[in-house]
Length: 232
Image 1 (cartoon, rainbow, N blue to C red):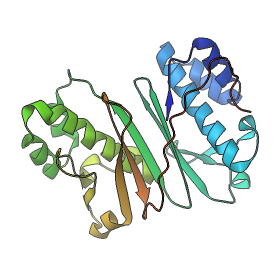
Image 2: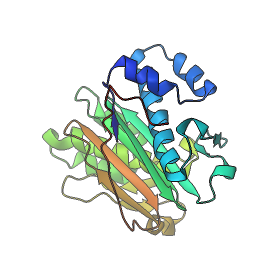
Image 3: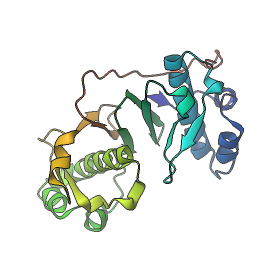
Image 4: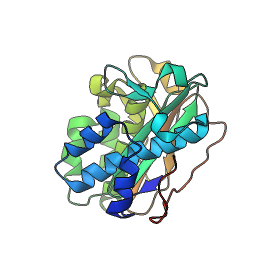
């Protein structure tokens, strides 16, 4: 996990390890905060992957599937590392696994959203019923818990919204653990995935989706020293 707010000079230094096309993409954002999220997310991915591969961060090469999901170039990925990045508010999450699909999502909780209306449009029938049963003072948090779990699973699949958000059910009640409850049209698919909540702070909900079982889960809170250049 990385955080924004380390200073514009440090973000600019982090952008130096990005590829030219990544920097160009960042420059297209109108708002500075959006630009910083992309820069920090991609830089964090490069730093972690560079450490795992024992190569310079700016030498990492990415390729993309038809839905825009990045992966390591095959020539650099003999260990079959797979990864995913998400950002919201001032939090940037990066998840990496070996030989299994992974998706991660973080959502800043916003109290002013019409969560019931959004759920009616995107959630499954079961999820809508479960959300309606949650006490009013807990419904917003339950909504974002559900949304982060669904997004993590969708992102792990790598096909974007080609898979409908209502084609599977996740848990969302405050007293339930994070879980993929049911998948359609293949009901056996749910048993091949694990979803875990990630604690990234009181104003956020975050989730991780991993294909297969989680043998070991390590979490790191990366807080760069503004006086030290990013790792190369």
